[in-house]
Amino acid sequence: MSLATLVGLGMMNHTFFHSLDNLFLFSSVSGLLIFLSCLLCLLSLVATPEEKKSQSYIFAICFLCLVLIFAFSSSNLIMFYVFFEISLIPTLVLIIGWGYQPERLQAGTYMMLYTVGASLPLLLVILWHCTSLGVMDSYSLHVSAPNLGGVVLLFIYGAFLVKLPMYGVHLWLPKAHVEAPLAGSMILAGILLKLGGYGLIQMNFCFNLMMDSYCLVIVSISMWGGFLATLMCLRQVDVKSLVAYSSVGHMSIVSAGILMDTSWGLMSAVITMMAHGFSSSAMFCMAYFSYKKSHTRNIPYMKGMLQVYPILSMFWFVFCCINMACPPTLNLIGEMMIIPTLWSFSFWLVLIMGLMVFFSASYNMYLYSVVNHGSFSSYFLGGYPMKSYSKISLFLHVVPLILVLKSSVFNLIFFLLA
Image (cartoon, rainbow, N blue to C red; front, side, top):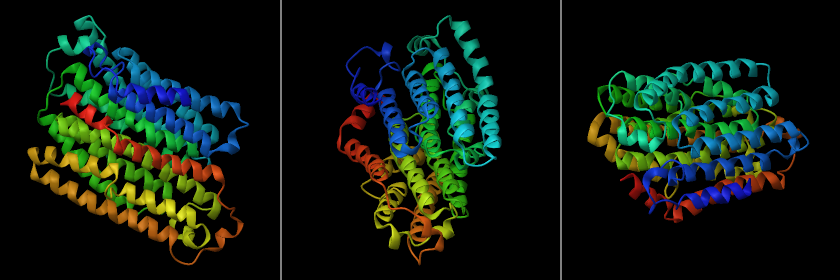
């Protein structure tokens, strides 16, 4: 898995000076997401050493990692759809097999019904499109396909907007996160949601989709829904549910940037996907480690962490700052680059984005202050000191954000998308 991570890292700088027929087979965007997939799957195994004796647990994570690699590197549209759907199976196994409560069956049912139901119309459109043109390769479809628009956009985008998810079709996500084990939550938030964003990019490329009134309605609903999701974070009492709703808010920026189909919007989406992959995964790690020490996920009962576990409180501070897009984090770059694109379409979209940024800072400050400040609860009496693997896993979530911020990877992606 470590070797696959290094291969994905090397693929980011590949094919910038090669022919475009491998755009989605070895492109920098797919290489970036393969790197993210392998690294987060590796970190999920590092963060849960108590499951090392379960071979089925390790097999499920490794199989999911392999499926994601095939999905992100597939240049065949039908094969991409197949691997996109197969990724649901190991995720469902992780939730049902290692979930915490009996409600995990309902969470798995919600996830399957939402994602499979939304992707069936996409399958019909793909079969119709590939049959009419007689080709399934991504670049060949891009060259030969006419521009598409209208109601068909809803069928094409629907499967990936549910996967992101967009507000309104997001109800499966908080349920799945609350019932999933740590590795399931890390991979679901860090990688599987990015599969929806990558799918939107690939559909725009293969179908030559045009920005029209239908697309603008989807963008408006997505941005307004992201604002509502940030408001709902202030009302949550379960820490995993709060992080799940914050993912809905961040993914609304990704969907808006991709659907508007400008170079600034695409660049913002790629950066936000990368930054959110590491920050949300780390937030779920901290929620799990805090749960192991306080024996509760109820935010008011987790108070006083700073007095008992100062190192964990330091990581809470760092990742709450990253999640609220404080400078000079990668999240800030992603959120700022979407503003010119929103401004070119409507001032009201920029206003909603500003409110999202404000309330994002509000719920992250609320989460940090409530969990770490105050007198510690009696629930901490049975807690254990932080283990070395938990410190390593949290530290390794910070390192990629620092390295990517200092590298020229995103500059190269920007020139490719422009």
